[in-house]
Length: 189
Picture 1 (tube, rainbow, N blue to C red):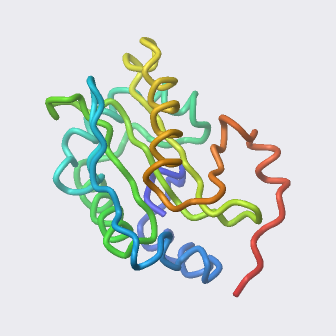
Picture 2: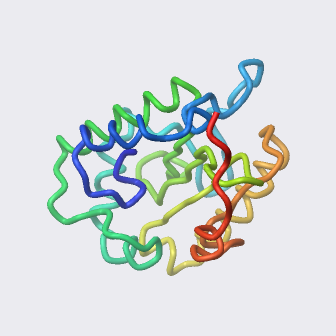
């Protein structure tokens, strides 16, 4: 799992973690017949797939808001010593997840695409009762202006209208981390 899940570990360790996940967590997140939306546009921002094309913007965004992201997301990502080489590996992993239809990470950019305001992620749920986990983070400046709340409202509607998910887990918003951990895991297949 790339650094987005607050794991400050090396890619090889992340690969081992992926290998230990239930098969369901590594299966495609959406049916093969589903046409995955690759963009979302609003008046002041847009979403694009998180990958090598936006690596520099993503790196600038999270490295400029380290303390804020750690405070609002919990954990120790991003860590101050991350490099652009680390970022390139992370973006390759994000693109591979997207291409394999296993998760859908998005960069949240200004409408003109010149600055990243944060990220939005759709990942498989390992907990019973949910088929996807939706998470996000925003840079400090956007958060202070109330943008994260607007993004949450917009993404909630978008998921209901444009995606095939039955039950979305908004971990940290609609379900506390403690309640999430207490949920039973999905059965291994």
